Length: 319
Image (cartoon, rainbow, N blue to C red; front, side, top):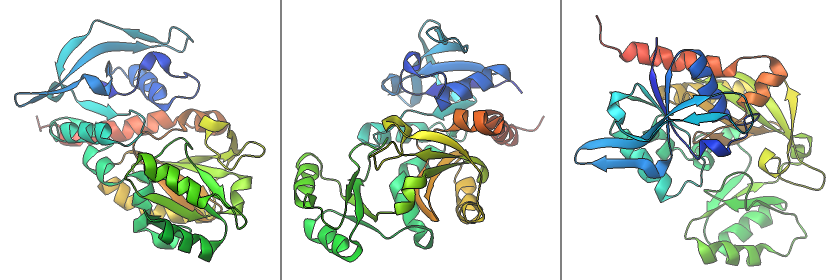
């Protein structure tokens, strides 16, 4: 099966070829004989009943500094493609949301991965609210009084923006901290969005596990260990990836959420688990493929493409 595939993502020439999951997906797609296109979200256009992109043909190679070869920009009707990958990084703002609305309009003729309707309706810090038995004590609130009440009940908490990413704006406020009011003033001064507070989990010092699910099934995990003196384990801010296996608790969490992810067209998902608790379900632009492949020798990108190809085959008209 040869597919015409477009990646809607951030500039491809700026990716880290040893860490970026979108690059690895493109590399595997090319090896499988698929035709690749690339465009950034600002090149997505609705024009008189048609969704188009000013896209460029793409070829990739694992050569630092020359990893992406781009052809001339062309106006491409996205319904003429087989697959569009929704892979730009958050922030999950109105720009991001608008692209999901436009990509909704090319389905079911073109397969969009992950399904944009549910990416839009399942932001990573909100989807976990459907599984309260799997998550640590959590509050989403705007007012200082509510967040103070949560902190009074739980003592040591994490406070972060509801739609943040990459560990940006994440603060630990322990029982003796006196900065809650100042942080609340700062956050609410530039945003009307609520904040999310969670009970601090001391197990994070041993790592924040990223579990990769393909079509709702776990394929493996990496452990992200915070740098010395750091609360956040995100690799963007110095977290160290380590090899780790899946525990029985991890598998139970995946079994609980996997059917919903599969039903909603979320082919490639990364969930975050600290100790025994699910903290996030990442649908927008999950990472971790390359680290998992290096640690476990699993061709995760191939597993993902097998799932995508199967979905495309099931949509194809009978001969």
